Length: 549
Image 1: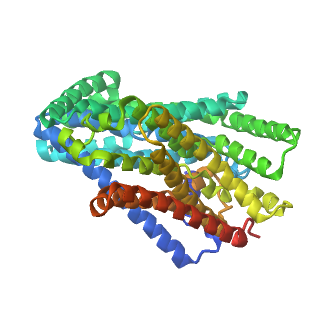
Image 2 (image 1 turned 120 degrees about the vertical axis):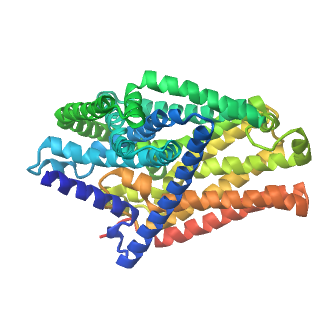
Image 3 (image 1 turned 90 degrees about the vertical axis):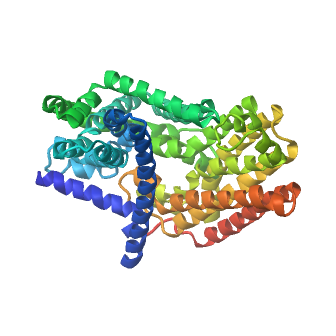
């Protein structure tokens, strides 16, 4: 137990170090301020999600469907973190930099696996609490439940995500084992994950489109869906029904079955994974050596091309990295296809946005086309893979730093590896919209200038932060991909800029001046952003630290 607690303590320190890296020479006070900022931002996001969940539960209770809340809460808590666990498990369990060191310690293999999985279980329980606690609070207040229901509800928050998280981790384990045997299995894994996320997003918007603008009809449809969902949950996922019976009816046997299933499935998955843990890591290490051998005998390339190809391979070699950065590109193309089929006016009239009817649409006129460039600029800003490319060099940073190349060439190659897929996605999306007749050539030019200009600016902001204080001390790439300051500042800064200038061009300038002035302003913002991004890149090329002694 002491060994496991020590390893879990190391995991916590690694989590804190990913937010405020200690190896960057950052003063203790600055690290503390950054951690406080991250905590406040997390608290804000938790408050927003918890409030939304509570409002949904209140709506069900007021509608006389309080009995739906317990099984729905258990199902939501069980499944909320499954997809993200599936994506993160591979980077958490396999291919870590400290694998050789950890496995050489006199610690049982089972303890190592449990300590690694503790972070996955902890994040799953935290996500489950965000969804389940507000719903349980509403249910317990509305139904006047007693202390037994409160205790069982609290236990279900911890128990509900255990089995699904263990199964998701086991699925990632199986995919990793398959990827270790087949060369391109990792790419298939990424493609399937991207398609699954795209289907989820499109399904959510599809429900909005079919709801219509009739509020009463929307409420009735929602209640009908809730009724069907309750029946589906209790039949398709019996543990949710067992937990709900224990909370609502004080059925100790049903809740005991729920607890036994949660703990039993988790223990079985852990036992199987720890037995094959060494074999899978050994197969992955062998595949990396073979990949390096193939790269060594490859075709001769220019330094620029070689670094760009290396960055592409790095992107595709880290599933969480690829998913975070490639989803924005896929979403751009998907939005263009949907717009080409339905049309922007058709989407607005579908009822997906409250308050938009025929009169409001006629009043908006050509103003609605001002929105399109900012939507694609937002999607482009979510795929800034180059912002963490310096830190991802890790312990091999000295190789890049000692190469007979200028810092400018190295950084430009890293930036180009990001600009190429962004540019191709934007050009393809613009071509789809042009061919389908949804936008005019002037708006197509505006879309490209605004999206590429803002992306160039904020990608260079991230590169400047990363190159000034690179974090080479990470043990798992997820630390850099998920929680590093460069990618956080780049994405959030881009979102603030796009929403701010987008609101200015869509809502204010057409009333103060004209539609043409709004289009001109948007193009001007894109051009200025591109110039500022290039100036920042030139400064970064002079001051970058590609290796820290």
